[in-house]
Length: 112
Length: 115
Image (cartoon, rainbow over all chains, first blue to last red):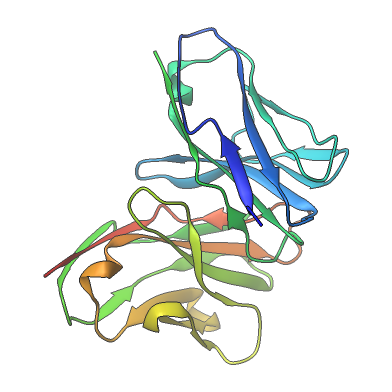
């Protein structure tokens, strides 16, 4: 039982490049979400999903896309990377919205 | 909208000192409350949660938190900290009638315990 798996762990991009951060969970959780963590700002919700085929925006969705074609996977896409997107990204899942969330190990992303 | 304030950004304690980290939330309805801990280089882990019932909640590793509804607070406490408690602590709130959104986190408190 791996829990929530995020890949890659580290990534450096140039401004304007695109990439996809992968997130997979093997707990059959319906609820999945993406956060970014920046110093002094805690975790801010980017996008979330209440089940396969259903996604919605969080607090800071601009510049990011998500899709949820299966229960297990919830990739986060950066369309055109900007230095302001340098951050640590965490994926999380839970059985329902108001239940404790299980977090992945994070992806540290640097945009040059 | 819901929001969370953690007023202590950086706390330094000696081992065996008592700990209290403040957390205040802003939300008019019923809430679920959480404390998460992030050890250096690791992901967030759940310390404790409050959904309903006894407002004094006990979590792992000797931590506890008290929900005071009248003060919109959910402060985290530990009677005697250890060096291994060095970590960042996040308070989070989830309003039960906020639609489909998930947790709102505070900005975090970095705890440094000196041996």
